[in-house]
Image (cartoon, rainbow, N blue to C red; front, side, top):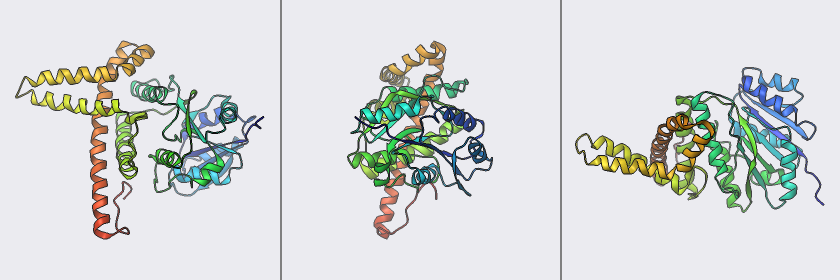
Length: 344
């Protein structure tokens, strides 16, 4: 018979505002089951830490922001629970969250880490926020249960394994792919990660076009490409499935053929074929949008999704060029030479 493991909740926050207040409200309802709640104030200037202190959380403060990787590591260093449960400051968890996480590790003792999913009822009602969060929900719900990486917004891991792996890579000094990189290392070391699809949290973030582009291109596509090249880590899961890669090619085929059709009208046949291919490859997602929010929502979402493939492909090209440049500089200057990163 397994003893229920103690769960330490760790929340990094930088100027969390009202969303962080809602996060804390949801965590309050887990206190009867949580071993402790640790909030790491990452150079916040809006006194988020005071709100957490009022809620009875343990507080760790940094005077200057250093990114969620450093903040999570600091929380993990102070935690005493057997399970570390990482939650983002713009997420709310269900009241039985700790009970379910502890129960999962009891049922699956051979699994070292578990990640959850966003739910299908995003807090923000405006179109881009609904589109973005539903896309994330669908991606998780249709991915492999034997997960290929970790997720810092809602992820739990055995404390012993976390420290054995050295925690998150603190060279990612802003919200980026620090959780993906950590997951890659976990898998390479032979530890199992499970996607607990039924365990869902609510995302409170409001997305707009600029924040979506910056996040997807600068903080996801480019650094993830560098990681893929460094680790030879192309996986058929999450956002880099074979279907997604084929969709990137089809999106560029559509764009180029439509531009070329100005001079050569026969290229419209290529455009039509590319558009149909995109619809076929992503029919599951578009049906999901229609089921959840109606036909008009699905129709509005399609061009945004095709745009996503275009700038994701651009990010892969940019990231590949940066990786090649880094390799060239290492060859020229030796292993101690300069390395170009997004933070420089």
